[in-house]
Image 1 (tube, rainbow, N blue to C red):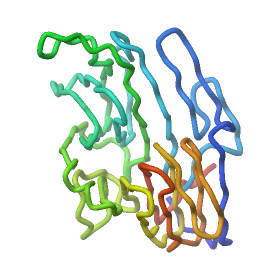
Image 2 (image 1 turned 60 degrees about the vertical axis):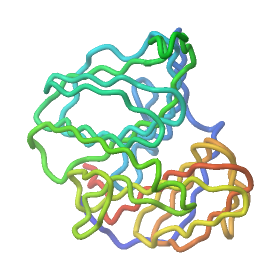
Image 3 (image 1 turned 90 degrees about the horizontal axis):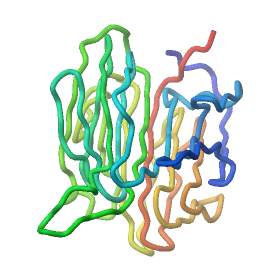
Length: 255
């Protein structure tokens, strides 16, 4: 990782510009190169490599598959997702629950839409929508790990809440193995405002609703902004909204 000399910039990426993978059970929109969608000019921003906006149909999902040397944060927006992995962790992830999986030396896991289960005698069959984000760890070959914590109450304040961080001295719901990065989330009602951190690299993703970005104008659901060497802008909700903000103080050194 490195912190080169930077030129200030604000790069808006609209929702419709994202690559998209659509199969029978999955509708996935990719902010960065992913899978068969490769663009050498769009591989990452800061230490963030993946920002996938996924919708998975009921009773389906990602079968057991491997990962290594990656910090994976999953944030559910609607429905619920069942996680199981080869380290013996299992659980249901739902809106307001922060979850991190450290792939480390290697881990197998699956993620399935939980809505097929019977609850209170009723069968819930809604799709699950979630954003899965990958950042590189500080070092390769760490032990695999898993952490989750419910923070629904903290999100009621209409402000940015530190959800996942590896930054020294930075309180957050869960920890990641990258000392240069932190994920903040805000749920905003119309008229409520959040101020972005000031950092070498920021990534703002409008997960739900619509907002106005100071100096740039309206952003709709699925829009993203990549900030370089700038910050402190105000984001104001124009409708009930949810934003995900990565604060990053380094970038990946590309060979």
